[in-house]
Length: 363
Image (cartoon, rainbow, N blue to C red; front, side):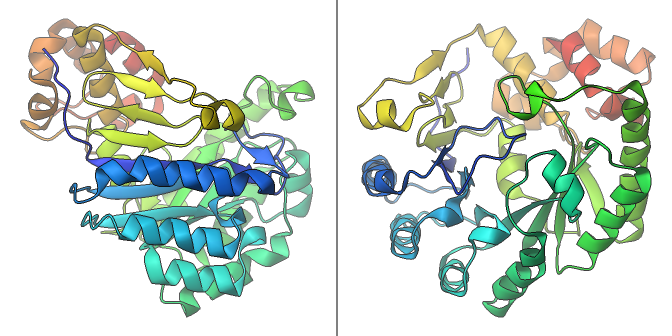
């Protein structure tokens, strides 16, 4: 039976943005500066029980954490530092347009890793997906961070955009590699229901072919640049993989604070309400309680998103059972289909390319 374990990682959802981008399905609020102070006070209450608890990582996502006013941003990061958790990695998401020299100096004092949302350098492609911000601010944002001693920098890009050619994507990759980045996330565009983009997006079958070509190009170009793929959409120079995400993919527990934040205690998953006002009013989180067998299979398939998969004994320590005992027939089937490596709990190139199919089989 799966058991509840102590918190090992911390995620804080900062639900504020300058403006909602058309493709974004994450919960956030624009023009909500009046809610920042009460949000921070509630986060502070949630942090108190963690004081002295050893945490592996802390991750601040959103929304746009750097939309916070400088004094609130510093107060938040100071509270995290005062937990004295010994976290090996403190990451924060950042958009270039919300970064200022004052905020960059604050990040330099408190965090160890910054992930910047770029998506594309091309103004026309950015407009096609309703991406906020001026691309001219991207390079200065990286410069501000490096001037404040931050070297573990990541860049987020999206490919398969409406009207984007293979040559456009190659140009975005080339420009990203000219920045001082040690990590790059390259995501294929997913048009989520309920977003502004979904209301006007029309799928073109030819786009799917281009997107597949862009994905292959990404692996080739980044490999040649010394960035190794370690997860379906993530690449890094050696030693600069995102520790927080790897821990989550491999079954560690995590506490999520803030509206829409998720937590996993080793057995159940909890999701906070996607409304800052209801969250501030004390709304209870939704509990995802499923049979142990299903939860273990879910954990297994998440670890298989990574190129390394699960090392010997690693899954059994997290789930209390070996993968071969949990899903013997399905693992044998994936190996027959050449989607899983023989003698290893990791997917082949084909398995990673068709991860959704592998995941469905394991579930």
